[in-house]
Length: 229
Image 1 (cartoon, rainbow, N blue to C red):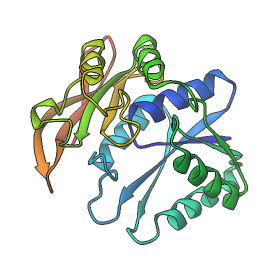
Image 2: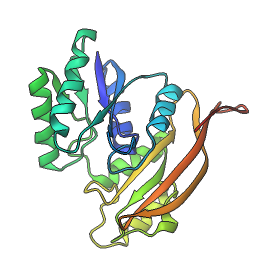
Image 3: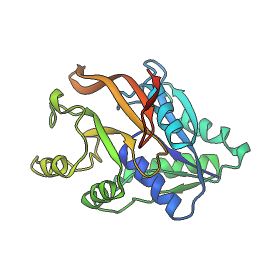
Image 4: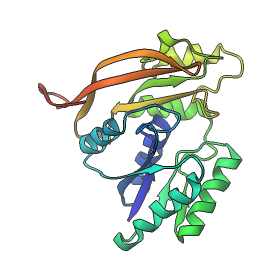
């Protein structure tokens, strides 16, 4: 059994998809949230929206609050909690940041499992292209104000969005250095779609976020159902 490190965003989602294509039996999503805010760290996504993603995908979700002073220790403990269920490895969505790679390998080594990086070394342009070609829909939920405005929160990662990213000096088109983050609402991993129905852009400590207040899970070809908020 394998699990995917899960923030709800596009790179981790595509990595999970690629791992499944490569034969890794990914059955769980491991999501860490701020113990203070009950939201995904750096993304600002409500914890229950991650639960809606897992439900829409038919995946098991392990969601753990993590303290500010020992994130690594809390992550390792979360991995170890899955060992009795047969955890053999963890899938990560990193592309090229060496310090992230070493951290992932380190926490997995502490838990005695394999670190899997299906997207490692793939150029950002290719990752963005593959994401869209596969049919994933990702929405921008946070952005560094050096590159983004509040009005861009809620934008869909599209060919037009990627073309705009190319025009901004220093901006990686996938946001690999934390320039922006996303939440995935649909794609080939999803049995049903997550529909955001109430949101607005906000600034928190100068950073741009999409404040998502309500959503629902809908059939891909049927009426909306089961409100989540």
